[in-house]
Length: 263
Image 1 (cartoon, rainbow, N blue to C red):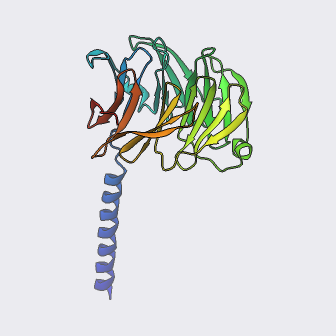
Image 2 (image 1 turned 45 degrees about the horizontal axis):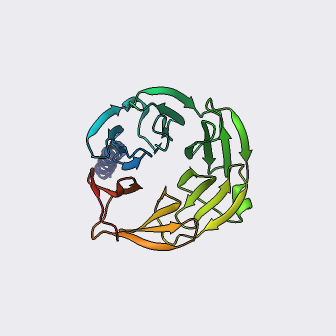
Image 3 (image 1 turned 90 degrees about the vertical axis):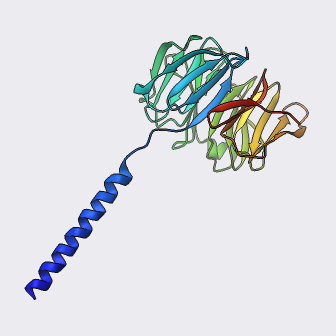
């Protein structure tokens, strides 16, 4: 009996040790591998990969690069103002501003807000738009992070349970993009205007009064003026991201940027 008990205890101990080793191995974090691209109105291209930002000319020549490892993984990048780029670090809850040489000019900590999931620049008055999924609140702040306006209960306002993944100010509108429900359009005062349905869209980009959206390996355009929709690019393989600008349609695959041939 004692021998059986001893064997049982040894077996339990072995199982616990094995489980412990497996748990430690699984818990190890791997470096962030997200990679995406953005283009400013001058045609300069920006490539984010593994916490590094690279600025490229319209001819794809490297102009500058900067690694900001201390800030962690970059969640999003806003490049519409070539003289003031915005990096958002969601896990650190802060915004970092860069000049046109990729040098840091300012840092805004968002810890005094509720948890912020999405951020974008406002081109009107050097302010920012923030969105919190937890409270479903759209917030506008000045360049120092001081609240200018706050719009609560966005879900009730649009009469839908939304889970947006992108926040963009373009022309005279603010857009919240939900992959399952499309674009929710607000004016610059935070008033809800309408919803644009984009079936099966994964992400969106804006250029020349159009919203471009990805569906699997296809890129479509939707004209914000005449509501015309058309296929602009179709790939026979998967890709990581796309961008639309002065250089046309660009796709990113395996950290390589190539010009797509439009339909």
